[in-house]
Picture 1 (cartoon, rainbow, N blue to C red):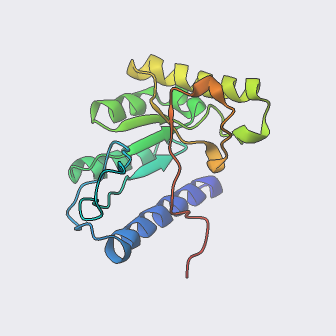
Picture 2 (cartoon, rainbow, N blue to C red; picture 1 turned 90 degrees about the vertical axis):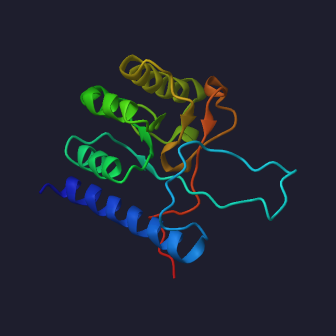
Length: 179
């Protein structure tokens, strides 16, 4: 197995383990609950008793020719929906996998075209990255993504080229060791 593939597989495994730890020990979501496929905010009018914890199962950087179909098989077998934030250049390589994501009801979002740190680029260049990824995904799925997950979580509010997209970050970082 190539070194890069080993790293991808390891990161995927770590993501899943941390998600399960979060579900079992931190949240009060029953293990049989399916993952949220839409991202929603709690309104101030909701009381604390009405607020229910939710999780969203998300994957970044794909699709990958070997691992993404295996992942999709597992999700389908368990009737679980997830959100995939795709790099445009990978989506171009594997459009049939992106089509499958869409057909099986998963959310398909933007993760830039080539996985660059958007907030360290000139705004025009960052917008080109996001627009190019949106165009690739739209050509494959027929829809422009509604969600964006910036690589490295690096986002700047002045990236107004894509203000019609909802920025999705995370609250469990798999690259940070937790005690």
